[in-house]
Length: 196
Image (tube, rainbow, N blue to C red):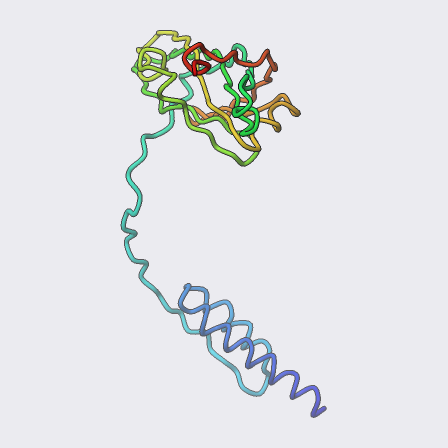
């Protein structure tokens, strides 16, 4: 009997500690009720508490909302071109080139953020140097369709993963598109890079 009381006392102490922690989160009433049921000789009355939640302060800049369902996106094709130079091969560099079509079937124009390429857990931003503004999706007028060629510069572990899996994902306009990648011929070095 004494063992049972000690065990009950231990459990009660543990529940009281949890009740103190839970009161801060606003769930103390439920634990208080559990304490009342646990003890026959010392009834505990649950005490309702209210906590005010502070108004969150924004710590990150406001993000543009994703494109509504009125925009249909489609990857028309993707090719991976490994580096052709010895230094590029050592750094596992490659260029992923893909053709993307976006159709706005809504009544309002929609502005899309730059698409992000995902290879496993690696996120790769659009190569701005290889994608001038006229080749980016940007704003699509109501009822308009836009097709563009996007270029991404890969290096490190992303290149062998795409080469092996032949797959990647494109995050754009609140959508995540799966794409099959064809591996093409290595990029030939330009005369400017091979000159002594």
